[in-house]
Length: 623
Image (tube, rainbow, N blue to C red; front, side):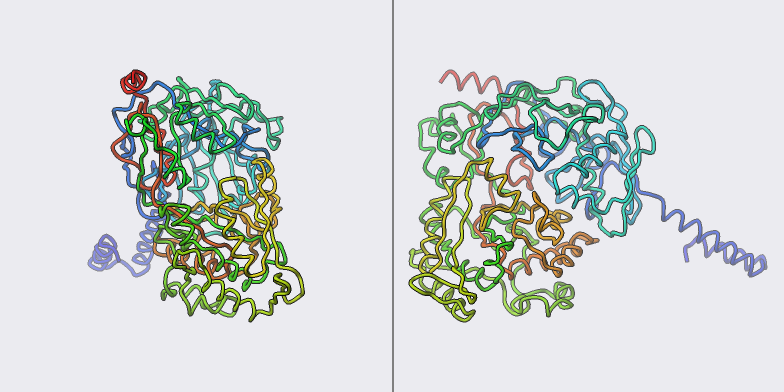
């Protein structure tokens, strides 16, 4: 009983008020309390768990600088080619950086696990149970043609992406049962029978597209028509497949917002495309572009021994971060009958010699990926905790026994290149499972040859795959490598036309609905989905629900570890490697903030906090 209720009760006793009056009065207080508890939360920001880091009156993110100045240009490099300016559909090969044209309702900070702040929406409104959300739009927001961004554009964008966008939106938005424009600047989304805390934040990421531009057009067809947006940049020019150039929107309505303060400083951002990494390396050394994310350990170790590096004209820098690195892996396609056997999948994994590869091919710069959430507290380690067991035990009969009895451990070698102990273990597994070798060829219990193909898009990956193939040959498994161009690769990947593929599962600090896209049964047969392995496991479906519906960080960590553990013990993929740093190379003509965002694992956010320095550029040109 609250203090006010107690005082009122005492007052009634002293004045000999009837019991009926007391009950009626207390009921009134209870009703008022209930109504008060149901008052929606109205805020400038929303966090998946806990409270936002930045208050309502914040002026900038900590990883930006008040010294930043507008001007100059940034030249980047793209891989392969492109044939589309629409990145929201499952067709075509979209150009890089297209998101620069569009604003979203909210924007996530890069130094928190998952918190969003107002962009197009200046305020977000939702009840405690997050069963609905209302976004309050900024009346001053407008598209590049001067047309206001209003609630109808938001409703239109949602329905358009759901009906004609990439399959991922079907998973993200599946629990939305209604969307309505309450008035010109308020949009309400109502959710179905779900307990997810994430859905308001997922909707906060909605890119708002102009209804008056897209109505009557074929959104689901790839096109090089320059689209209309409300964001900080617009497409200035396109040379199909070779170059795309963006120009800063000098009249950008949102340039002074706290979430944009110190960002998007370059007047021009140009992306030249290179079909081969070797050519791209030579191009940056020749000062043909300014900035490169280097993801090749070989290039990092050997390609930059040039005078410009020694003279500190071209800067080579490694930046540590604390981000969830997910997993890069060889991924089995379980749609192929051959890979339905978990024993075979496990045995094949023993043929990959990471220790030798790391020493001989990677210059010892990598760590072995050990989880679908490497470099994160979300990774499963050791045996299941008590809290994990509470989630896993009800499904004990449907899970591998090892989930409960053995820590997931990857095979290790001595790095000498003689991987005999692991290959002997693999052979013993196969022998026990009824596999036989005849004339150096492995056959399964049904008498079918165990041979498959690895699909690649990068020529540089052949040097990594070939030793793996040689080891598999010792087991009687013959593997072919098929190297194809980027456009073919994207199409075959979308339609699941492969036996094994190399893929990186990008994970966030707060996993949620995207896990349904990665591992959920419903996504297994939807072309273009992220379920490359073709997993259709009802237990995994249930565990994903625990992740999506977690109500605290502790619950999220427990559920994610349980899911991770089950995925690992089913050997759906062979983990490769990761690094907890970003490797960048750039010409010394930029300034940047003192602080880098800790969760920007690929340095894709931080680059837009940089700014051009005329003084450094002049000095560089004079040398």
